[in-house]
Image 1 (tube, helix red, strand yellow):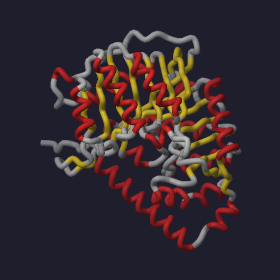
Image 2 (cartoon, rainbow, N blue to C red):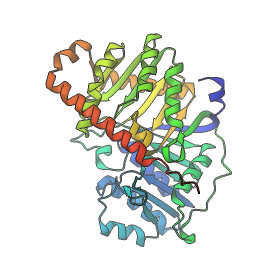
Image 3 (cartoon, rainbow, N blue to C red):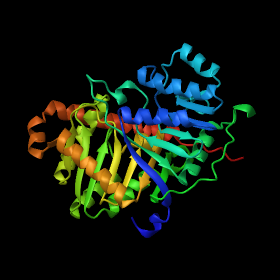
Image 4 (cartoon, rainbow, N blue to C red):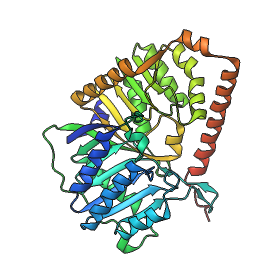
Length: 392
């Protein structure tokens, strides 16, 4: 990281890495149970299954003991909640609404999706990551959980998180009684003194902080880079920066999922394998379950964890939040964990293996998937941009 960017990262934080599975959901419930004043909970998906209901039940219990709760769920990601559960949530006293319809008729415009996953309690502690609230992220004795990560953060940046979540909640059409008014200005610092920054991507508000942090890391990497990417389809500039880093001698490892819940996206990603491998970048595929993580670690000095995917859907179509960290001890420990996952749970895709597996039919399907997704992302970029008012 250069000196200018380091000044943007703030010290005084406590930071704990969370991994999908019981650890993550138990920590969410613990924080909710300890809440005293208010909770902001904003996420893309809450399924009406055992895991989702466990968190909803904890929120209802908190509301019943007088905690003010703002629950904001994406209208597309959480479109299958039953009327009975919605009624139960609202009758408990939770302030609840869905974030934005998929399509805005006025102006013929697509709406951004609320893709970040954030729990903020009393303005003092926040969980920020990539996991949705559903059984597939928790796992069962018979089926391993989808791999993903989050962080539990305490310290000064909770003030910034509070302002972001309050802004998303306080839309102009809600009543005065429903508006969030809590501020988080008296935040203590912690002895760990971890330097970090909460980063946003929100195309509608001209915020592309996460994308810029990735570009900066790719441009300035010296030794090594590990990227775990669930829906990997980087733009041309990002691919160029990765190629240039590899040419400089940076050891780049990209971990992708072997099997995906989005087959077309996976085919489009595999279409890029030849480009990646020809540029001496190593590809691994994660085997035990779906890989849903969106994280990176560079040179043991910087890492990023959150909801942002390296593709233009996250750039143009979603509201995202990541935590960027410049603490060496935290980053190296995280880097060691990612390396362990590569050793124990992944297979390397060699160029020779790729050529053996490639057929004209697979290439055609990959090319078509790649072009269709690129076209969709171009259309989305146009339809989600803020429309300028005509001049008089």
